[in-house]
Image 1 (cartoon, rainbow, N blue to C red):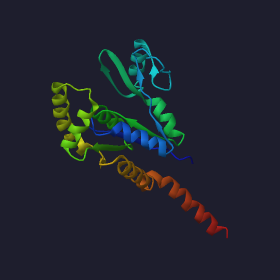
Image 2 (image 1 turned 180 degrees about the horizontal axis):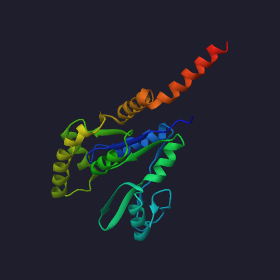
Image 3 (image 1 turned 90 degrees about the horizontal axis):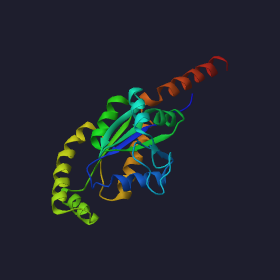
Image 4 (image 1 turned 120 degrees about the horizontal axis):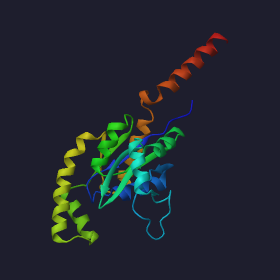
Length: 209
């Protein structure tokens, strides 16, 4: 029986370092990144099936009607979603799939995926989070305050996740997530069929020794 992959859902407040952690995880492991679908037009250098699955609005709505999104949302007039069939194909082929997504999207995915691993990335402190956002240099004082207030609210959702990982350094955070996934692969409810197959094989050997 082929091994099924694990869906790894990573989210957290803006500035917590989700993107950097996911990039490091992909560089160090044979994980696969879930690619989103969108109705927006490709930007220069973007390729269909690599950066996004680019769909027109009618195609996107058809997939909504077919329940082929784990989650979707409209952002600034464009639709974005996580294709269920694409993710499922990778999982069925034994690939571990990373989905980096906002908190609301992650909770919608959780409603549809019973055996996903949901990991919340936390900053070492709120002051450190504030400094990380400031260092980006892309925020006005008003937008900085909005993001900071939003981060305070978003952290309240941590109890909805399976695991919380503090991103004090990227290397430590990545090693913690790798350890989580090693443990997940040893969970009895994930490998019980393999255990039963091994047990049947052992009994067969004992009967015919």
